[in-house]
Length: 160
Image (tube, rainbow, N blue to C red; front, side):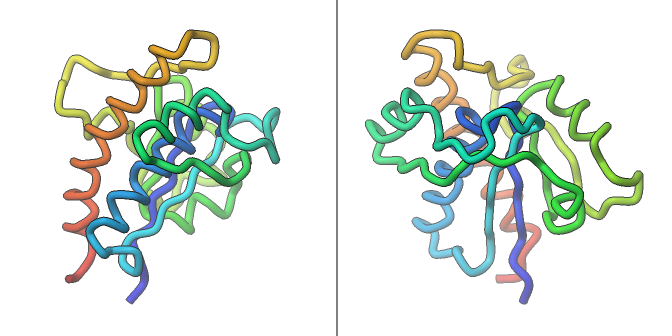
């Protein structure tokens, strides 16, 4: 059985997308679904390639017993057919992911992460990079909310 694969995408792949990956991986592990659902993260720019997640996001996540790790990378052509679902954190990244697609016939479903947030008035996961600690907490709150719904969505895509 091929696992269902999810890619989280933000701009630099150092704040929102690695945090979403970490939250989702924790939920997947807690549910015993590590063989059925996989996830990764990437950015739409290459500026931070190779960097660890932002230390402020790492600290905020760690305070919730969520471990962020890995190194930043830019989304690439292979991702568009490797992942079943590509989720973007905001409108700019959504448009960039669509525009960066190597073809209109990619097999990945491309959606906005906020499609999985319970509150329909929230349309973007805000970039906390230039804000204070409260911004990182707000992002984690939204990611935890959305990842719970995303997990249920992913369950419908796998055969249990």
